[in-house]
Length: 498
Figure 1 (cartoon, rainbow, N blue to C red):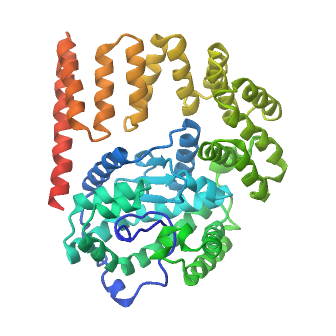
Figure 2 (cartoon, one colour; figure 1 turned 90 degrees about the vertical axis):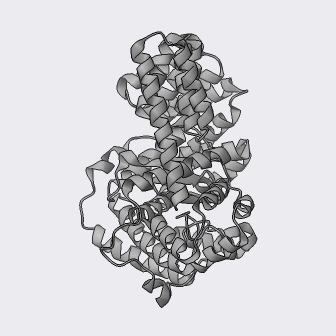
Figure 3 (spheres, helix red, strand yellow; figure 1 turned 120 degrees about the horizontal axis):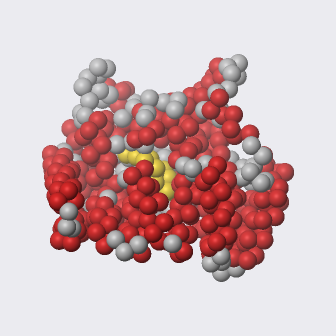
């Protein structure tokens, strides 16, 4: 797969990593579902399956939650998905805090990436090729088809498999394997040949998506070649997934040929108006996000600066400014004054750069200069009222200065992003600071149910009922308890029935 396919994960996750060898065998082709055959699971069942998995995953994974990185990744995913049958508003994207290269796609339109993907892909196009590939898996429902075959052939227990997948996707492959029996792992490996067709299909769909979105389709075979070169230098020890799923020459050749074909088809077509806004005088958004990830993973500027100097030749003119940004990030939070000075210098060169403006507000926040942070963020939001990173830092800043103003911001964000547990966590904090105990319990209930901690969620809703004095609120709380009970039952029934 274009994925980190561990021995026990090959059939079930469209996890982006690397190759499954030569193209599929005749038997694998014979195993494909007949055209026009009804899907194994409805769209609603797939959504429930994905949400059940997501709740298990959140209990195992450490998420890298940086509002700038999250917003950038979601915006890029939306840009790509607009050229697929996927509905952008239903997509969920996770950034896992792990230095390993990895990405995955799960039913219910869930895509995850490890933060290590930013460090491995030196260009935005190569990074985008990974997301485009995963969108290809989702659009073709590869997870569901693989699940259907594995159940038919091996009678696998989906609950334990999902637990293993959650651990492995979180960066704990050995724990993931341990969650399954040896018989399950062996049965899963038997289905790997089937997934080779899926990889070829996702590669080709991803290439077309990449080109339609305005990226160079050659980025995908470049990504494959880069992986192959690293394998030759480091051996399979550097990439555990290569032990069972080596990257094949035929797969690289296939993507190179198809990329050339797609490029020829695209070169005479006018560029989409969607791309017009990407020509602003700003630092490369991808390079900025990559810098943030590198500093976070390495804990300082030295390694991040060295990586930047040796890579990304297309950013030669910006490298000095990106070095300044890296130094500013590395200075936070303890040397915020130095960070502020560096960011102010950058903004003289790029005064319209939203990422730099938000970063400066972040630096002022860490310097506890909340009025300065608030001024920058309020000006930003006057120009871009829905800019999520600014809303996030504006809410955090007001929690320090005026919680009664911060609370409505987090309430609004919780309505905009109801599936984001980080928003509910901050909403609960803001409610507490604003003196709304009822709101604390309601927000904590949502936080816990999104982690699959149902008893804690029900406990907080019941505590909210005890202190509520309004009949309408009592009715709303009772309805929320019932709806969560139904959701829990539906998820469990789906897992038990698989």
